[in-house]
Amino acid sequence: MRLIEAFPCGDALFDHCVRLNFEGIVAKRVDKPYTSGPARWWLKLKNPRWVHANQQRYLMFDGHKKPEPREDDWQLEPGQRPGIVRELKKHQVLLEHQIAELNARLRRGQAYD
Image (cartoon, rainbow, N blue to C red):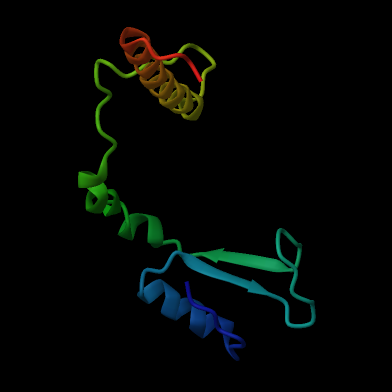
């Protein structure tokens, strides 16, 4: 992404964008104030050749796939979100560790704190 404060000829800028296979241009009207978020005076022009030029782009990221789930990973129930399952798994591991420590103290005859 590049920020260009002002450009005298938008057509020339868009032609240059098309030649370089950029996705497009986002611009706002000069007479309107800057506001973040959607506004009617923001304009997005898409490069019609961009989709064709970037069809094989996903191949660049082929080696960065998520690992396959292991057999000991929890299976998601319908409606469960993966983030919640990960947090539950972390808590389960902590609780199992604490239980093991308490059992070890009990075997040694130490009182609970």
